[in-house]
Image (cartoon, rainbow, N blue to C red):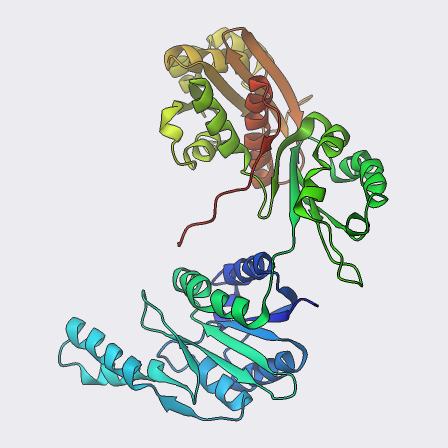
Length: 446
């Protein structure tokens, strides 16, 4: 049975002007993929009634499912309910239960302001006969409308507020999609690597993938995606069904782990099904806690980025002691004990200095591991032999201090992000862990 096809429509002038980043589209696309729904088109629309109507009618003619986001508020530019009703050839009707709820809500907060209540009652006006999608954390209810008769299409409209949209999608829309279409997720296997370019990595895994395709019809139909976000590359194996509906099983995909590990090499740090494995900070925190080890940081060019990455992981207080943002040379000397003569002789971006920074962080914070970075993130600061992108990384531990010089590419933000990942990868490699295997935990309600 073919997968249901979906169109995603995010609505709002603010999304096209750049005032608001459209994260809803990407999140909805991921949820559809996890459900087993194929997203074939996604568009962002202005707050223009005729444009919204045209987009909904075009989507309903080619898709089984349309999900809209935004335009359900009380103001004059919130036009989604009216546009969906007109696209479906029906009128609006006031939902009595919603109207009572809205009236009570605003009466409690602004008693006597009847004009404000009347303004917000617009949110109770839904397409006639629509299925109400309850919003337990906001005033804008969503709704579902079925359009067409020969090949009916469900249109689900959700608020644009991300927290409300996500809760309503999970609790209101997804159960209806599952019961209506009988969907099942497409099996996936995800491999995360740092330190090997996209084309090089593809070259490394191609022989294993070509051999795998000869093993079964499901593996023969497998689709391979490569996703690069410097310096990380992700390989995604997707069990796309062939023309007969035959697809690889999760176990078949997992059976390729050893071969892909060999093809990717030491750059590989995590493997997982579905949404994929945990990211590198999570993997490191888990490993440090399991070993009873602690970590301290000394950061110059990253300005605390390594510490932020580690502390973004719940439970990191069990292994992360703290860090020093040693941006100025005086801080490198005073807080980390870097000898002034090393900086004078070799420069702040140098092997001797970054080694001393790592050793100083480890000693002064009494940590098992001390990671340090110093570099030139740009756009200025280059010097002979040290162009923009030159970064020194050192890791101090009981057995000594490891060092690596990086030559990174990109703008300031890219270089800083890449430095953080390379520093984390040095920690991971030192811990000697095999690739972390397992699926990332489900995201929260926020």
